[in-house]
Length: 130
Image (cartoon, rainbow, N blue to C red; front, top):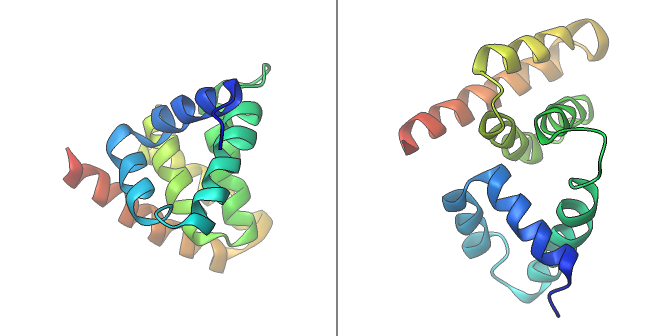
C-alpha cells in the first residue's frame, strides 16, 4: 500500500495511543500476514488517520468513548486495546473503573463485570511493562 498522508498520520496516532512497544507487538503478531495487514493498513488510514484526528474532541475523550462503546457491545478484545489507549491518554484506573461502574444501570451487570475483569488484566499488564 502506498503510504498516504492519512496513513502516516494514522501510524503516528496509533503509536501515541497504544505506546510504541505495544503497537510494534501488534504489528508482529496480529498484522503479520497479508490478510490482516490489509485490515491494519485500512484501520491506520481511515480510523486513526481520519477519524481520530478530526477536530472537536481530544484523544483522551475519544479513548473513553471507545471504552464505553466496546463495553456496551461486548467487544472484549477491542476493550483491552482501548483501555490501554485510555490509560495512555491520561485516564486513571479509578476514573475508568468508575466510568464502567456507571454503565451498570444502563447496560447491565454482566457486561460491566466482564469489562472490569478485562480492565484488571490490562492494568496489571501495563504495570508489569514499566
